[in-house]
Image 1 (cartoon, rainbow, N blue to C red):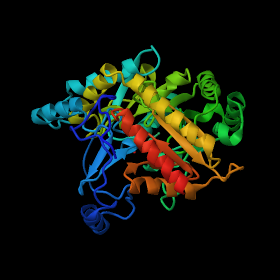
Image 2 (cartoon, protein in one colour; image 1 turned 30 degrees about the vertical axis):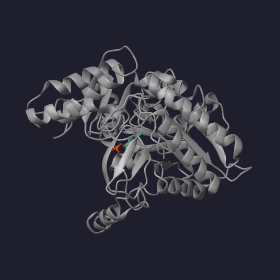
Image 3 (cartoon, rainbow, N blue to C red; image 1 turned 120 degrees about the horizontal axis):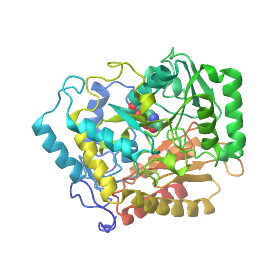
Image 4 (cartoon, helix red, strand yellow; image 1 turned 180 degrees about the horizontal axis):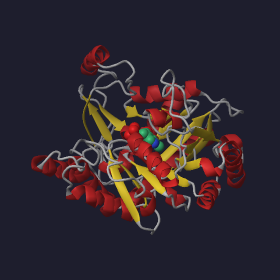
Length: 451
Ligand SMILES: Cc1ncc(COP(=O)(O)O)c(C=O)c1O
């Protein structure tokens, strides 16, 4: 629990001591009190991972009401990539909130919405003419990307992949693969959604070309390209288990989509904005999506999402067909412009690669010494370990859950994921000091050794 070197990373957020500090058990009495109120007041369906009452966060820590300081290896599910309460984001939000809070862009447009759209059009892959539309959440962006693709093609069917996660609204539940906890009992789901096999090298052992052939065969035989509006895929799957497809899989899907007039949608809600060591993960695979959905890291913690893509596709909708009361809210747009400035000016793509190198080195060393870690995979600051029964690739969800729980009890927030629940994912804020990241990984290693 040493005070770590806070100079090794761009430090966002309030000037909190960058240390792991446990002054009570987790949860402490104040957190217990809040969790009891939560149980009484908040719907049971809204769960939580770390049993704490958060009161401050910044750099690489989350501080709770009892004075515990936890190392943050989850960024609130890939959101606070620039750092929690990043000073530029805070200043931009404060200035905007004092100016005006809302007009509704569809009633009285304002500059920041247009500037965010211009930035997205510039930053997303491809040098073709692009346009954007802004929304509130990742799920809403996905819904709108599908609307736009259907309108553009005049077709209805949409293909999503095994292990996909695209959100919790009705259409996005249909696109999402995993029943528990996301879908079970919440149907019926939106129609004309089909599921194709993914490339999952650790489990299918297939090269990218073969895996793509399987997916394309399914689309041709079970749907027919003429009926297919869009293929939607996360370039690296997030909730599904940080699954990195084999080389060649994504380019072959894009080629087939282009050849058949199918809109290729890259869902970069989790992978976008420097997380993977590229501004967008599509760049890693050398693909240029027709449409790209973004959210999470876009605005440093404020709710904002976007669809960006080829101008002729984005313009398919009649005027008034896209929008929403809050989409592109001025405070969220001000935050996004500040966050985007931070990504570009603070070298956060490079920082993600450096964080990724630490994660990959440390986790690979753990894997070499422990046959329960079947796979270490990811790109940049988006890395996961998949637990298996040694000598097999049978998923060990119990171990992932036990290690994650032990880490949180020791003051390190880690998140699990995966269709089989057997993956621990690491997505620290890029503002985490190196020493604190190492200390967090020491705790993970100790929790694993004790499990
Ligand atoms: C790839 C992907 N798409 C969509 C979503 C849904 O985003 P939101 O929770 O903002 O609706 C998520 C959220 O985790 C995601 O990871």
